[in-house]
Amino acid sequence: MQADIALIGLAVMGQNLVLNMNDHGFTVAVFNRTVSKVDDFLNNEAKGTKVLGAHSIPELVSLLKRPRRVMMLVKAGAAVDEFIELLLPHLEAGDIIIDGGNSLFEDTIRRTKYVESKGLLYVGTGVSGGEEGARRGPSIMPGGSPAAWPHVKEIFQAVSAKVEDGTPCCDWVGENGAGHYVKMVHNAIEYGDMQLICEAYQLMRDGLGMTPDEMHETFAAWNKTELDSYLIEITRDILAYKDTDNLPLIDKILDTAGQKGTGKWTVISSQELGIPITLIGEAVYARCVSAMKEERVAAAKKLKGPSKKISADRVKFLEDIRQALYASKIVSYAQGYMLMRAAAQHYVWNLNYGGIALMWRGGCIIRSVFLGKIKEAFEKNPALANLLLDPFFKQAIKEGQRSWRNVVATAAKKGLPVPAFAAALSFYDSFRNDRLPANLLQAQRDYFGAHTYERIDQPRGQFFHTNWTGRGGKTVSGTYLA
Ligand code: 2AM
Image (cartoon, rainbow, N blue to C red; front, side):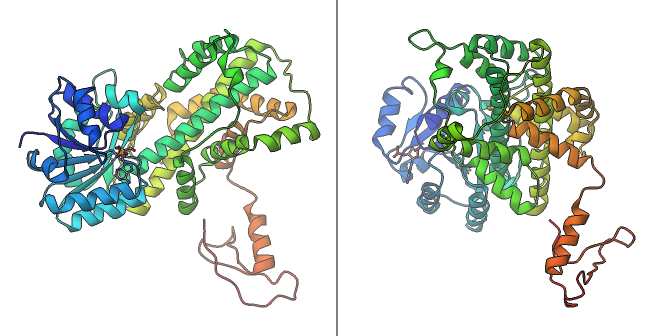
């Protein structure tokens, strides 16, 4: 009984996390479905470390200190349920099962309940930062049984990424599926950030006629501003990368995007909770449109639009694009936080919003200086209802607004698609609009379906129906407020 923690699942992520834990002085016992990988690992990557190999689940469990901590990093889905079933007979009350994979939060809610019903504790944790992050310090977002946190805190915080002052990018997120939910929203925000950068790139490439080297310079400069982030940094480097023939590799990559589903899950959740994460929605759909390559190539020959060339002063317009990107990004994070707030209410989670920004501040794909500002906003006002109302972000949008509008308008005139920039701007204008046209919408619904409406001259909650044509009946149908 000497190992601090067990890890099941020796794919690259799992191996790297084990080595990271070992570096921090923890003794890790490992197991894998394909058992030969255990010895492969011990004889290669883990040679010379304190890592202990196990060739069966009982052997793995027998190596652990109490309370036993068993972490799985296996394929999301059935594999997690199968390992829980295999582990349960060998564990006892107070032991902790941890899922560090990319599980759907609803599965984690179900598994937490199930494992707790057996007297054990469960942790479902998001781990972000890819293989490199797992090795050098990922962002770790744990949720599950609150009683498990004191038992995993030391290991998780030791191996996680750290911000400049040494604060770990890992804190308790909340009950049952909260950790995996927050990880899912992280990935969706990542979709949004990437789409915004891609729209800026298309405006530069097709509108301003810039070369990859020129765009490389622009992103290098942007990375020294408020936009300083991992995704801007890799974009800078990608644009400078040359293929074997010394031409930019970026120009040879097919423009069809793939996706693994976390963006889609987030949009589904937003629809269920009635929260407009419009920018992320557009980012997911932009990938879908990109995937329709053959149809787009055929349509490009038939459907005409204006010349894409933007004749504005390049330096000035580039600054406009930068401002548009920044303002849109603020809206995207505001929307992401709106979603987490609604989810917290619906699933009864005590989410720590500033802590979430801190966890995303380092280690993960969306890490940025910007997240430090979000952390500050929630520190100053933990009850902040909407990020757009924070004085810092309010001012930032105020300053960038002219540029943002100019970019969206110019793109529309030039036939250049900017779905995320435009969605963000439309949301901003809707959100700050105290009189939307939904009065007409309610009238239409009442006209054709007797769905009723509320009146501005009557208290909220009273519903009225008008017999618009003189032919409708008096019955009304039910309604709900989205
Ligand atoms: P393997 O090496 O035996 O394939 C990432 O794929 C990790 O998840 C690997 O450790 C892999 O084990 C494990 N894995 C994938 N599907 C699994 C399943 N159905 N049952 C158990 N482990 C699985």
